[in-house]
Image (cartoon, rainbow, N blue to C red; front, side, top):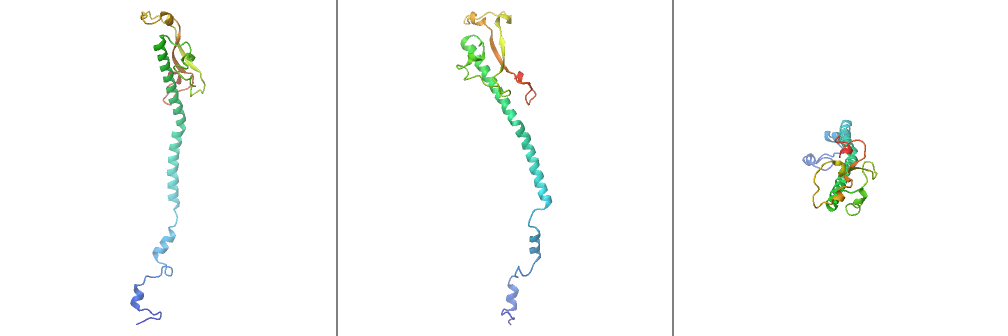
Length: 168
């Protein structure tokens, strides 16, 4: 038994229906779900906004943290150079330029003020009034001269931790 198109009814039942000719429910559902919904887009934009605001807060203080770290390192290096100078010469330097070139390559700039302007803490052994005996290996003439025992930053303000720059 053949039909008009030359196929048997059993053979035509096993052939898959032409999807272009017969729009089924799956075809209609696919055509309606091609893009993102407005709510999905709003959720994604909100998440990106939260991440961006967290990143901006971290980046905002990154430069300041770097300058504070550089200031602490500069102070450490200059104080170490002063200590080394004292260990070698049994006296403190009269000025910071005495540390160059043997103890420092150059006097660094304060990263906060961007200037080579350090507060020099001078100790005068004659006015100290300690009354301690001078050790035999120390030159009494060298010990009678005032010298720089410490350096501090001249920057105003305080660190992110709340400590004044002048107390570092």
